[in-house]
Image (cartoon, rainbow, N blue to C red; front, side, top):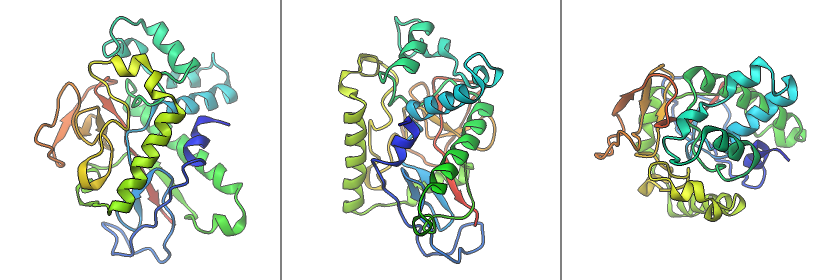
Length: 268
């Protein structure tokens, strides 16, 4: 079973978007379920509860390898900059990190980083296709609970900043903590010397942001927006110590200080 499907199946935590007026869009006639591992911003938009973990991006690469081959331009165009990774995993070569990423779960819960804006956009397109394929395999009744049309994409700066309004009740906070614990156990995080010894980078479930429940909102890796070169949140190299949700950061090209947290947009 592929890693991305594992992100969907064992942790079937779906959330109904609230029945409120939509922000910057028309009102949704029907309430639909968000994608797994996302929480609703409004009746049309949901956002990842954490930075996108490396194991999901690895499955994207595995899909490309299966379709086009590992020596294909498509596969190589998706590869992260492993040389950059050596700056947060000191004493380890790029080749060693590549082998650990592809051949083991040692980096499974690392936030995917060292990728370009264009790579992030391509990954979002694949993620949309992967979910469409998964939903098409459901029964008719199960499928009707999900939107007819949707897509994953990078958030706008304003959409990302709205995380601050998404206060969760105690029941939901416990559920989010359970998701984190289950994933950490499944990927044996406690045995990952690379992740546990890094002075800079933390796992995607390292810290929950108080009442909102989202993980690593500030200070791990900043998160790309739909505006190329603009990220939100803060990073290990440029922390947002004031925890200002509306503060933006600039970046140029792939970086170990920039990752992704995606929007699931309900279109129809």
